[in-house]
Structure formats: C-alpha cells, structure tokens
Amino acid sequence: MYNKFEDIDFWKAIILYGLNAATYKIALGKTLLELAHTGNEEVDWSTLSKAYLDNYILRLGEKALPQQSNSGRRTVMERIVTQLKLKSITYEQAIAMVERDAFHDVIPRFHSIGLDRSIGAEKFYHFDHGKKLYLHDSLFKVQESANTELHQELEARWSLLEGAFQMGHENWDLANDIREIYISKGSARTNITSNIPFLSGYQGNTCFYCGEAITANDIHVDHVLPRQVLMHDEIWNLVLSHSLCNLHKEDALVGKHYIEKLIDRNENIMGSNHPWKQKIAGALGNTKPARAKSTYYHFENVKLVLGNRYWENSPHYNRATDPFYKKLITQLNNR
Image (cartoon, rainbow, N blue to C red; front, side, top):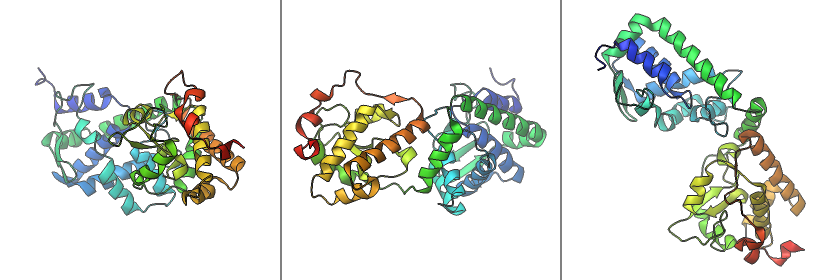
C-alpha cells in the first residue's frame, strides 16, 4: 500500500502529521538531519545527546517558549537547559542527563504517523537504546536531496507548536521566572522512601489524601506541592499515600484544604522532639504563623506555575470525618 511513497513523503508525514504533545520529535528531526550530514552510519549515544542538547540550547535562548502542551509540566529538555543556563550543572553534566533521561519516548516513537507506528517503522534509523543509533540510507537520501527545505519545515513546525503551547499557558513569563527561582535553589533527587517510618507515625498509617488505611506493600512517598516545580525533597512537603491516590494526583495542584492539612501535620511534628523539627523550622520559619505563611507562599507560586489544574480527590471531603484530624492533631497545636 505504501510502496508508491518516496522517502521524503515518509519524512514529511512523520514531521507534519505526527502527534505532538511536545517538541521532542521536531528537535530529533533536526538532529537526525545534522547527523546524516556528517556521513556516519553509526552514532554513539553521547554524540546523539550532544547534538540534541545543542538544538535545544539554541532554541531556548534568551526568550524561551513552552515546549509542551501540558501547562503544568516542563519537558526534560527545558529543565536541563534551564539548569545549564543557571550554571547549576556543567555542559558535560547536561549531556549526561540527556543521555540518561531524554530519549525514552521520542526515539521509539519518532516514526509514528498519527497513532500508527507501523507505517514508518524504522524507516530512517534503528537503535540500541543507550548505546547507538544506526542511520539508514533513506535518511541520507532525504538529507542530501532536500536538506534546506526540510530544515525550514522543522523550524516552522517548531514555532507553530510553541505558539500553540503558549496560548495554553497563562502568565507564562511569570511562571517561567518562578520555576527558575526554584531550579536555582534546587537539589538533586534523593531517596525519599527512607522517610516512610518517620512519616507513618505522624499520619497514623493513613493515606494523606483519602484518609483510608495504608499497608506496608502499598505506600508511596509523595510531594504535596509537585517536585517538578519546587525541585527539592524537604520533609515539610512529603507525605505518605496509596499508590493509586499518588498516581491519580500526578503533578497537579492540590486543593487548599490539603495545604491546611499539610500545615497541621508539620505543626504536629514541631510539637514533638524529633530532629526533623529543626529541618522544618529552617525551611519554613521559627514560629507557627511564619511556617504557615511560607507554606502558602510556595502554594501560591506553584499555583501560578501550574494554573488552575486542581486535584481535590473527593468533592465530598469533610475535615470533621478525616481520620487525620480526628486522631492525630495534638492539643498542643490547638492552643
């Protein structure tokens, strides 16, 4: 059925008619043409990563626009380039992060046309993930015959996507500034599962979000305010939840009642003699009003970044019937 199509027809179908929830495919298209221009059939993963990163560095210059349709998230490449801009990582570290994190979806899915992966399957390359990319003759042919035209189409498509994504982002410039503030102060991801025993004692073995009992084989440690904005694993923002509640919440903004609950949980810890109280005080403040103010400050910042994508779990939530409030808030915190 498709044997009447030429290589360039497949290429244009992939670039112009593939589904784009982000700009990954467009960046990979540019990278592939550049790699084909070198004439090498085998490309090391590090060489691929460097070329891919360079395209995003160029694209996300002084005036970076959103690279994803989901207004509540930043792409892996946006986060890497921003950290590089802020000099929190080196260029070599950025390349290593691209190698590790950037290609899990785009490399396997590049050849998709619409939702169909079979039409253009391995038309222009095949790969050994994490090791090598093997370029096919069809890629060299389209690069040699129509390089300028295809680059122009990629640029136009990239601009079109950014424009569409920006229209779906309210206060994009302000949100971008806020993200960069948190990234500049951010920390590397740590193993937060070690906090389970400690957190469990302050939640009474109940899920922070639904209030039902949790068991040892179904515990997730979750960031109430999404880590992809705050960029840290500080204890004041960590809670235990069911895996299902955590997966449903994803990186959405929680309702205000959960922030109130988080503040009360933290005050419960502050009423104890646990060493973690010093970490909470250091992060949020030395007095109860100061800690509440700091928590709401972060909440409002995250709200500006994520927009009104609230996750409220149950619309019938009632604090009076929440086991957390019925059993766990100490008298010390009610004074």
